[in-house]
Structures are given as C-alpha cells and as structure tokens.
Image (cartoon, rainbow, N blue to C red; front, side, top):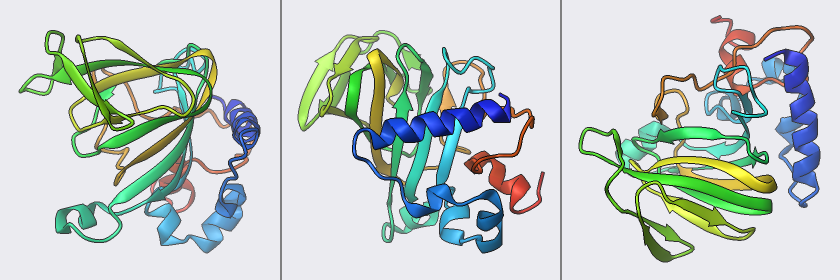
Length: 229
C-alpha cells in the first residue's frame, strides 16, 4: 500500500470513529517524531496504536481491516496468571471488506458491533491438528447465550451485539449493509505470533513510501523508532 493511501485511511477512520462518540487516546495523534522522542515502553513495546492492513495483498477495499490497539498487557503476565492480562482494540470493517479466515492460539476475544451495518462472521471449529473442521458444529457465546450452528454458518451481529471467540475458533468477518465499528476486548494480544491464517497470507501491509507518515503504524515501530529495519 502507498503511505499516502494509509494516511487517507487513518483520516477517514478517525472521522468514522468520532461519528459514534468514541474518542481516541491522546497518543493516537502524536507525530512520528514525538513518538520516537518519547518512546514510552507502554506504547511501543506493547504495540499500541494504528494498524492498517491489506494482509500484503494490495487490495484493501476488498481484503483489509482498520485497527487501533488502545491497551495491551504482556504475554509474560499470562504465564504468571497475574498482572495486565487483557487488551482492547477499536476496528473498522468496511462494507463487504473481508478480514480473512484465521484463528488464535492463545487469545480469547469478544467481538462487538459498536455501530453501523451488520457484522457478519463465518465460523468453523478446529480439528485436533488445528486445521479448519468443515464438519463439526460451532458453539459460541453471544452476549452470554450459547448459540450452536453448523460449520461455516454466518453469524450476523446487529449494533450492540457481540460474540465470544475462544482460541481455536476459525473466523472471517466483513460488514454488511454498511461500514461497521467494531470493539474487541481480549486476552493479551500478540499480532506477531498469534494469528494463524487458513491460507498463506501476511498479517501486515507492504508499504510504499510515497509521502511522510501521518502517524506511525505498529508495524513501523521497529524500523522508525528502534532502527531495526
């Protein structure tokens, strides 16, 4: 993706989020230079911030997702069973824009339709080897009520509704009837190692630097802040 397109998506997404009364934290608007100068470990190391992905496929409008990680604990705390064991994201799934089939090894998550169109999720369970089970029924809690449905069913969430996805539940999702504002509340989030995709696909965008970044993406941190790339 071109950096200019990413900057445009950030501006559009920020306006969409604000239209629902959700206000982003102050660090969301820090310039790249300010973030590099301050380098708070609680932001950079926790990988809080903007995340615009086309999964490396260069077709964001059809295959992509807008994410902003608001808070995130540490994986070390999960192993100890104490500390900050949770994470929160705000996301935008555009109308008919696919977030591809994937599962998590560790993360359990509540996916919440915060407003806009319907949020549609295609759901499968995992086989013992972790692959997609296209035969087993799927059981997921939706706002505290367990729903059981055939493999590959489409679960449609209206604004205000949510679903809990435990580790191993395969899911793809998109907006129906309009763009959707999505809340995610989960256990500690690790986008570097805890996303298993059904097809060979990347997690982050390949960026063409045609203009300066408006704000850094979490995938920029190693290169821009720590000089590793």
